[in-house]
Image (cartoon, rainbow, N blue to C red; front, side):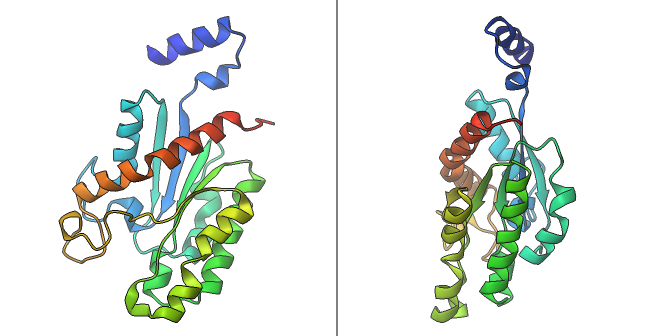
Amino acid sequence: MRIILVAACALLLGLPARAADPIIIVAFGDSLTAGYQLGPDEGFPDRLQARLEERGEAVTIVDAGVSGDTTSGGLSRLDWSVPDDADGVILELGGNDALRGIDPATTEANLDAMLTRLSERNIPVLLAGMRAPPNMGPDYEAAFNPIFARLADRHDAVFYPFFLDGVAGEPQYGLGDGIHPNAAGIDVMVDNILPSVEKLIVRIRRRDPS
């Protein structure tokens, strides 16, 4: 009913009907997006969609998270994982690259290629940054951590510096493995990233549909 009323108002105001359609955002990432060991409706895409709906947004968050995925895996599946009707993408990859000690130059090249492809498709992106684990050493951290801000600036993406902000290193928000968030941790992550997602939604609404 809400969508029908919005569509009717759009017609009366002479606005394009597309403005009344729900926005489709693909959450494209790894196990942090996929909801590793979490129950139904507890993962990041479901909780984010619920919070946006509470704020009156007509948004569908599509879960395109694959546990264990690296940026190489993400690049290989990007085109078919992000459908033609996607309005925006939350790109969350790189954590597994750091855990495996993959050359940061490879990680940057893969993310750069994904952002380029999405830009060519006129799909706005929110790039979620990651940080290398301390056990990788200061040299690896110095090479890995700045990748995300640099790419966000290069591609004019909405940038959220650290996907696990407020959760990493907080035992009450994590599973026993010390890596993945529990349901309470997901809620913290959603609350923290929400302003950046709203910036993405603004960009989606302003983009040129041609």
